[in-house]
Length: 475
Image (cartoon, rainbow, N blue to C red; front, side):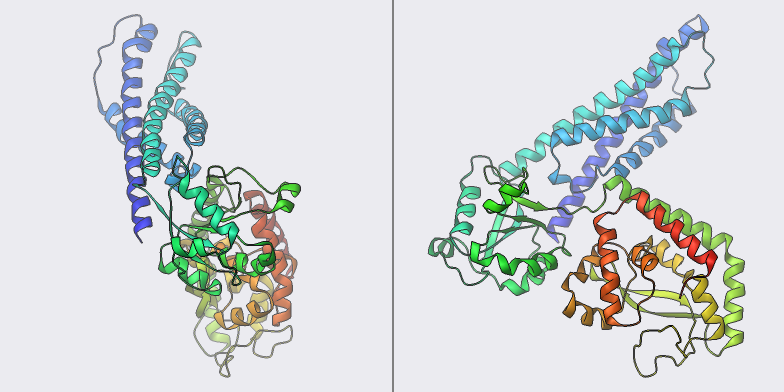
């Protein structure tokens, strides 16, 4: 997609600028130590020599800063960030990073006075923050001008074909400072017509086919402008759009104003309700992924004897392979192969997919033990390591069952906004589902998790899971 390529190029530019800024800040800090701080410490002038310590720092310290900025979300959605927001992030990360580097680089220095530490930390922070903030303001200004002059545009679909849609289209097109929206067409909701809109924009599809239109036409924004009579059609529609990466903006009515739902957004002069895209702050999202990778490596390494013993017991107590795998649906609706220790007889699904039940005769005796202790799930740490799953998240299902669930609960698709997990709030509070009705019942716990995702909630779920394993309450 052109938008993805555009964002990647800009991200690389900003990462390179951050690397060079951090390198320059380190060079000046190194010179400050040699020319000012060390003469105070030793009582004599110290020659400015760029030794191995300098070059090692010049290579590694900028990488350290880029990792911190990546964790903070600085390189996510680069064209949508305000300069004030970028400046705030730069300040917070500069403080945190300077503290870490200060303890790593300067704390073991021999000093005559604590003023040496104050000067050292002050110089480290001031140099890095001022240089990085300056180049980021410059880059942010250049990005803003590219958007305002139309050099960078976001493919946009207008949902609606009545007077409200026409008014918001005129407002955006006639604004003196462009917002970057490039309207590629409109999609009618329920047949409301506006002749002026039809003359200005082509009708590019049907209301029911929006998800496919977003993918096919590389759409980055959807502006929903329904008439009052069309609001009843929007519930299911907005739920389906939640699984896409497009920004969804809804033109509010008077009720939304009274309820306080309307917040400032990027469409100048036109108040909108913007459906949030990020379920977790980017730094928590990065920390969650780092936790997944670290724990998976430890489990796969340290528990390798458990894997071997479990595999041997599985193959010696029933015919068939030690591992069982099949395809399930995960993040963004993509299928992936999930791995488990085989807990059923090898011909368990010879008549097609079937959900397991409490007294399922297809489960082997050792398989029943593995399910109670969740031992059959531990091969999924490989899925976590490669990124198709997370340790904590909604349980993934097969497409066969998803097709049945969405007929009853279309909002099931919201689960595809996050990586599925080995354990989750639905698993902890409800357990395994034995039929479609129970899957729908468990769904409310998974939706509750998605709407309240935090690192703290993940830790709470892990504690509950650990207790369930110890008590053998799994099923």
